[in-house]
Length: 358
Image (cartoon, rainbow, N blue to C red; front, top):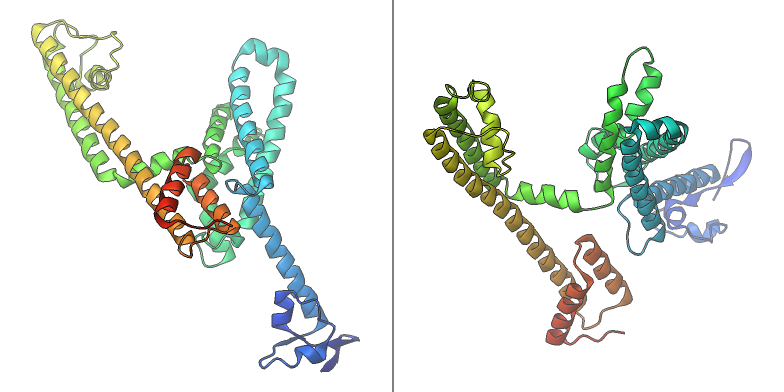
């Protein structure tokens, strides 16, 4: 079936054949045999191919910038490079605060700073561009997904990684040297490449009710102890306990079992209140520690259950294929399950079901 348009003789093609990447597109008669055919001109074919190539590029960029897959060496190298760059930036910020080092190596430190800013800026723009290929991202439209990333916690951290260095150039008339401290926020970018912070936030979120209840008890203990210490010590130590807010400093460091020793009670009643405050602090801190530890333990138990379910699914037909092995290894790495522990789980389930591994 032929059609003449836009100054050339073009052939209508089957959309399914184009999207599947058939190499036999030069046979219109073969394509026309399809029962339901949507036809496209040669220009449309080029457009669809270009669109597919663009989507592939976005998908690949998103995969490379995401936490590295064990089977994706490019992504793992990118993660390693950016992680090392973030750590070196923290070292550079610390060295810059030393006057003698900053005076001697200021030019080298500034060159490294602008190199880092360039990398972080390019990374930020690439994440905004490629986020549309992420089906798990929030937003039904491309710009909805982009805005969801821009205003998310990780998006704000990625923006803060380079913005403090660029703003002084844009707003040169203002003293924005205090923004340089915000460069330390680059450490939070490690959440892209390590699940440690994500695991902590997830564990606290799962036990948020218990965590909030313990913090409520800690707040009550703080106010009670500081109020009682103010009444007991304000007359004899007006410099340290002249008000309840100033007494909170002593209460806080005592409740958290730090005890700097710069402020302490000297009256018998004050010492008794101090002893009670220390006991309350031990109990509340122990509760907080136990809640976080329990949340981590429950989280690991759930991950192991999911890992075992994946192994059982792979062993359902009695054979673990190479693709299933790679999938299991990917899940193991994502859940941070030690290799020895994962092997023990696999061996135990293998003994129960007796799979045949090709």
